[in-house]
Image 1 (cartoon, one colour):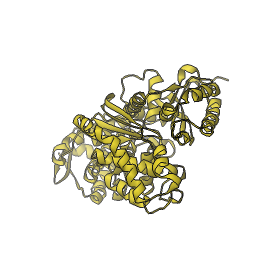
Image 2: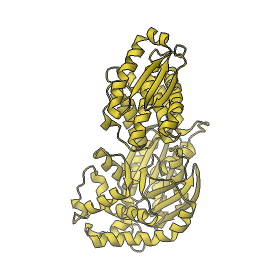
Image 3: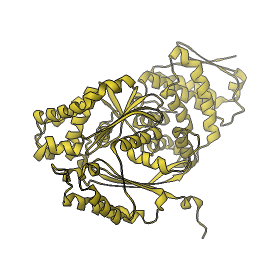
Length: 499
């Protein structure tokens, strides 16, 4: 029987021997994008096996080797050239690292690369840059089990990097021994972190940044808690302080029970929060967004074949269009109308061609991806797919915005479903109105039937359309008439005039 060519695409594997967890990521290139085939994560807590002389205990080594034996099974069918395996901070610190690496290499049957702190930081930044569309200067934060990396860069160029020997596992042992939580222990941990961070603040702030991104376990845990509470996944200074205060209500780590906090994140959560709080304080950070990639993605993008000149976002969109058999011509027509309406309304509505504009265009591309499942509930299916799909180039906040747009692109509007943080609620309302009108105007699903029309803002949205054309398209005429009522729920009005 003939095999599908897609099934013959090669697999790529990256393994990260972290200080807290060992991770394995297996992917393949599919439909112009990267498809995650498998993920394996084990809480090895290697750093907890370091004694005061930085000797890695036999028990910790045994935990690590057992985990690697699991990984070795999965690697058997993947060629060496498609595999990258790295060890990080704890192995760097361990005086008996050579012994551990020799034994680990034997278990895996592959060579492990021991990264320096600077190499780790560079790969973390590459992972963020390869999965993010942000072109503004950014500060990237990664809090690991035994080290913390801070990188300032722009696009794919890191300008300043540092790796500090502070981590959530080592701080847990140092400041929260026996799991005891109190204000004094927390303050000591934060002060110790600040002592290492403060010498960096002047040089980092001199370079500057507009966006702060982070993707390690502590920040992922905070984002999961925000999602559990149906809040935008932006970690603000106020929210971080709130979590601190909640944690200090518990007397022992074993008793921590916060809504949305997964049990496997609890053991080193408070020490990670202490480090993150110190970073927020020292660098005067107001908010942080979760990144889509970090070390493993940096490793992956090093070994993947050349993916061409398309942006990471466009690769993701093209992949979804292909995977869900989206009518691309219709999506392009909708996008063309949206671009015209945006230009027409940008001055009175004070719209900028910023991230919101690019998310509007992505909404035009993806508003019908749920049709592959069924028509009746396709808007809900589209929103669900976007919420749960791997979408390199779109962070969690971007995905929340896209989900709202595809859910509300036609029919009733529930304003609460539009509340998110990719833009202000007012701008989100404007962008949704543009998407909805674009879809209505393209209802015939042909690119040669729409006449020239004029769009303007005069306290209300005014569309001036040829009368004969409107009369020949009674369905579009009726939907435009109904849209005035529907848009009123988000404070907008529509008037259709003819010529």
